[in-house]
Image 1 (cartoon, rainbow, N blue to C red):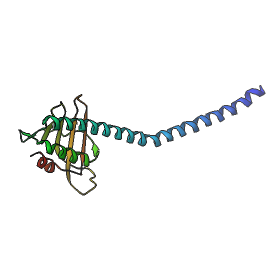
Image 2 (image 1 turned 60 degrees about the vertical axis):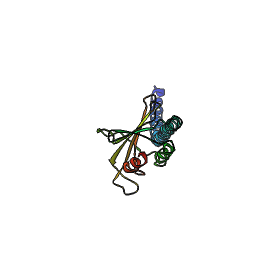
Image 3 (image 1 turned 90 degrees about the vertical axis):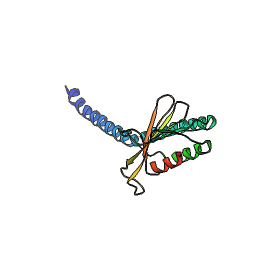
Image 4 (image 1 turned 90 degrees about the horizontal axis):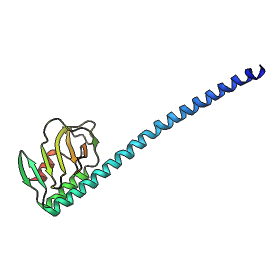
Length: 163
């Protein structure tokens, strides 16, 4: 009988310990979530850059980069292929999102099964005061997409490079 009375306070200590451990685990997961998301975000961007680089090399070597502007196909000169690539790369990873519902304003076909689509979009929280920026959606040969907007370039600038 005396042992039954002593064993109950021990259970309370165990519950308190488990509760404290659960709270610590929850706080640890909250702290780790942004780090894990950041890692995932950077890995996706790195994969996009790798795929885009491969497509750019293919288009350059096969003189296969074709733009569709205003419904008309325009062949991009080989020396311009890397200028367009540089503009996309210098825009940085941007803010991930879904492409607009309307048809793209311009499309690049790399000739290897991949393509890049462009839209002009109203920006949310731009870092440089621009109201409108560029939305890009790249689809690789396997059908995987990477879509983002950026305040570091514009549709007008990309269209100029494609002419």
